[in-house]
Picture: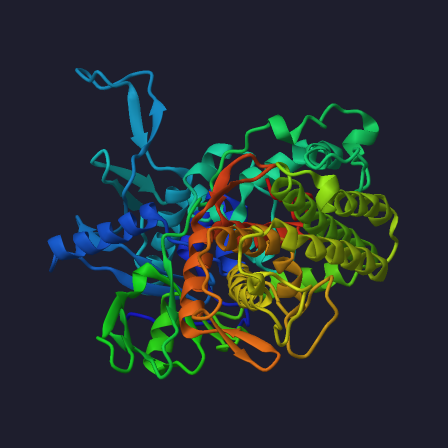
Length: 604
């Protein structure tokens, strides 16, 4: 019997379907679409356990274990049969599953048996072994009358008849899979919530968030957020159909609990290489760092989520290949804090980008996103001003004017009917905000550490050197999230297209500037963590971080990423590191039929 490698049908440009994809299709059509069409692959503990099971079986049954790679141009299928055995002259395909068998209640249990439930195959497992049987038939010319599924958790083997009904189900499933693969639109979330709990793609699918938004109106989302900064509730988005119809679905998000299937933390670390002349290489499955006059370092790649090369550090082709294989992003940042670019494996699904292009070319849709993004940024700035001045006499120090000025901009923001008008309002709020920032720095702190307005490219004081470098670190994390989700960073909705920057990354970063950079830097200044002489380099009117200062800023920023934050709408907590990816995924939902949750975050 011949073995085959993966490929495409010669008679049809469409790629062959994996038999496993039919299993996913019957489990959940959205899971099939994410895996097979958008090429989203996430392995959780259950997936790894399943892989280990097959390795252990092959090892234990060495010589009696015959896994076969098969394909059929006629069926349009390709797959690997777990095991093919001959029993009484007949070939029988076996499928091994780590979990338990399904159960059906029997009216006449076997004599002496206390259990009236009979083990049977789950529908998706039945379909999978049926497809394998049809592949074996075509390859061998022998009729297959039976397949078997072995469930290891309850040590049961279930027999599956390969009858006409099962063959028809396989053909029908192939047709449905082909139909879905030709669509640009992603199927809706399954109505069976229990399937999502055990699904490895739940962090990319976000099914609970989609269900939550279907129950809620824009007003119920917006009211608690407005009240948190002392603003009168004013509706920004258009009322939902449910709200207009008074169907009662506008129950408050703030009192709803959304089960969190999205991971709260990313245990993989960012590896910053800051030493001039350092080189990043590979040794097996480890990342090696060679730095002048320093001992060699080794880090297991499974513990690394990003490699960040500062200045003139270099990386070998072998290390880049390892990062690509293990989905480790690589970023380049200049010593002065300029973001150069990122490397991430995979091109991203074209269906995602088509949906992004079509949505962001619609002026009304784009204006809605811009308004919500600007509102989120301005309200976070206002919230920071209120927090930082709550134990002071605001009138005496002049903060009252800042607060009143920002609040007065909000009604104009709601009435603005163009992106340019919103940019102007956001700029005025930013000017008020940065004018107030020096007030929040302890008066006993060295005057050289206080800002003199906002300056960049180059920064002209120490404060701006700090936030400029930290914004570059934030930008690389936002870029990493955009690439992970599979969006096109060059196609944004708020910032004007420029040749040296990615507009979508510049858009998303606005959500996190206050919480992840401004606030922790002001707090660190008041804790006297910075040395005006040792942590900075002054060259004429330009001020940069020294090598020591960069290391301190990286440590401060990475620590901030591990802080947890509770989403004001979804009501669950996660780290800032995970929050960036969550917002990128919620942004994509805005144009995949599940809108309403993007840019709802606010500083607490």
